[in-house]
Image 1 (cartoon, one colour):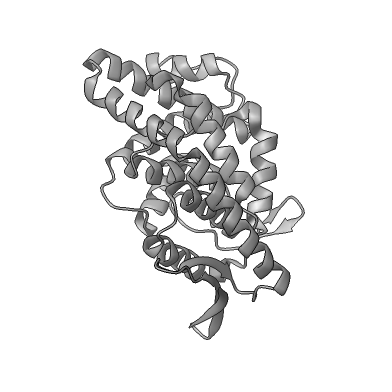
Image 2: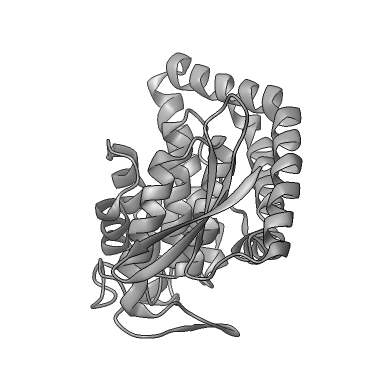
Length: 288
């Protein structure tokens, strides 16, 4: 059984879809300011079943990857762990930056992050953002709490330090993302608060949870720039806390990632769930 729940905050009504499951706690999906249509409710029912089936089929594989990652962290030598960390940071930073249009190649990124050698004839902004992303990732790994407002703003502050004046602050004006007009900036704080409230009490499978959170966060688009990079950092914060290895959205798969993200922003999360699982599987070879 599915029903709609609404909550009034500061005079505005916010909507949730709630799935009542026998002998389990209710599953909630945060919708936002607009009430869901009958079609959206029907699709939610259908997707719930398909997602549950897919994750059950993948559970054994995901469990083996988690175990292999944990074993790698506990059994590897100090030098092996340093090399593993360098590999993850380099690949993550290169891909997440390249998705956003960075001019730095993988070789540029590796030399910059691991040897301190800056590439010639590459934009200062691209170089600085790559350096800052490494700092943001290391900060994220040391952050002991779950996702909260402070973490979101801190990651943006580190990422944009010495680049933009709005580092660490939500945008204070409207923005257009392609053909889409971003959320009214006056609603950002409330939307983030609602998203975090939903996130912190949800009992979804970790992959489903990070998929939905990522899509909603990108839909809110709380910053003028850096939303994708902050969003992908937040995704890995949750995965790491749940015992999964970090997942890297690869630049070569950008089209598939964006297509899944667009679908997810419209409430269809199955594609991005499948995409994230496929990336985790593809990247897991280094742990076995």
